[in-house]
Length: 258
Length: 153
Image (cartoon, rainbow over all chains, first blue to last red; front, side, top):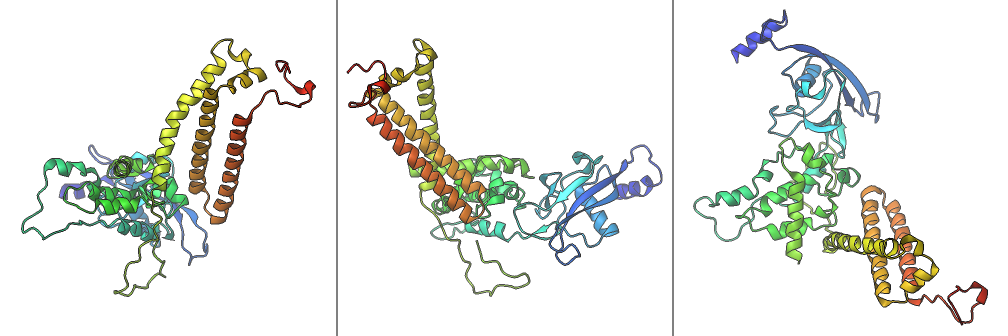
């Protein structure tokens, strides 16, 4: 840690061997503030900051907020790709600002940063996540069992655990749901994230609520609205095979019906 | 979806969470399975139809009024064409229905588009079915000048 700090202090004076190169980067941010002069109109605003090769988009946003314009508003909590707070549309793709290196999104041109689509914008990059979480609650994301509580942990074989391992990785950042074209036009659709989290319990050998969850997702706005465009799989910052999970839920429903 | 509350208000702690109004039922499931099954069947029917009409015998040059009349005099081709018509119409209409559901945002637009779609579906299916079963190349009491050459009264 100290080595990094020393490095940081020296590199501004002159680039020496092993120093992190720095460059100018322009961020084109979609601003929205109903209380500003622009009113209900969202506007693009450009900021140019000095960034380093190791910097992420989040670092550039921090620099803007801390040094250039304190009114810039965005969510972030852990800043290390775990909390799922800072999903945003960077250069037209949903990504986590804390996991996207500036050098990976072509810093030679202005980098566009927008709020995720399909959810109502509150201010700047902050959206109202309530519709997203409402769908999540709907699929009952908790263990459903019957009988007495065991006095020890619920035992599960490694194979049974591996069955739903992929979908346990979800951090509820909404990158998948807000990349889904069906969700953009129809906010009623459950969305990939809710289906992924249902998948996590439907295929859990310890859970007994699979039938209820399949029944919920058999809704008109459930899994059958999925058009397999794979936007969600591409957007997922955790690398979950979202579309595959949705197809597995579909298959479970069909084998149950026939 | 839950009722949107104005920002800054906290719901009363004892209010129960309201579930969304469900539109459950197996219709969407069956329609999804139907699309796959009818798709596979249509591949066979359509390519069989094209092969018989365009490749077998004299090929495309053989197609004229008499050729169609000859085909429809056999119950096999009547059933084949009927199946093709019905499956294609159900398959296509269901596909367009899902597209309307996906892209029409307002309820009124969706309603109008779907009404037009179902109307077109009914007209084509009824008319097509009627033609396949009641087709008569040489109707009696018709003007002889309008009749096909092979109609020898």
